Length: 397
Ligand SMILES: [Zn+2]
Image (cartoon, protein in one colour):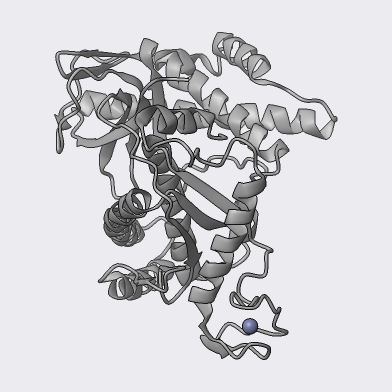
């Protein structure tokens, strides 16, 4: 285990024309290689055979030698290898029932990105130069990289609004675990409120989000009416992407503040385990945005918990958190979604729907934590750093 936590630092950058062309070519090759490897693995899967990373890596070497695919030699081989590792991870998650079957990358909809490990870039004197490039990237250092850190992985991406970003994964010696506390909180996810805590506190969706969503819906309707392939359609698509990006930026800001606060204040945070499989069933726009917010919330929460020696417990979503009275434990019969408050037949307690669910999640999480070996923090030890560091390193992946 590393002594320090890894942390991603993301910055905007402005590529030269040559760099933009090189990166676009690289994104295209990454997509091509990923899709060909996925196709090969899918065919093998149909024959009940498994193809692993090493096999796809050998395929890539062979593809590069063919005339049709010789263009793959024009870009850095590092991102191509990395996308095969990502594909391997996607299959591992699929076999572990944590994710759906991997999907092909589409030219229009998939994220345009390329990942470089240390052999694919040079970081010297605060300047980052990628393989196959003559000059360093023109990065906007919106916050400084901590002194002495070195990136181990660099990811370059372009969002749908055309903005370029570089994310550097670094070991950050500045982050140390917080002293252990005894507080725990349950967090329930909702549609009208972003989150409800077991303390009864409700956290609203970011300001402007309602208005931005209305704008997004309007822009999407306009896009749908434009003729396919027309200049107006491309313009309308950029407009939709811009609103999406604005919603995402504002939401990320809010989620960063919120997760930092929850991790600082609590030793244990219990959340609902909404899997990808369950999330994609409902296709409404509001639902899609709230689901995206939830998975981002969970990501941020989990990595911050790891930095600071905290614990995040995800409770199975089929646990009846809404229907169970958190006071007496009686299960209620029906609980339609429009019911926001209800009174328990048995003990007469009146519950706020989401607050009650959050309390139940907390109780369930405490039960899991008590049973799960190696997950529970060492409460008997003083809140010193050695104990909390151990807690970090023993944490389940
Ligand atoms: Zn009750």
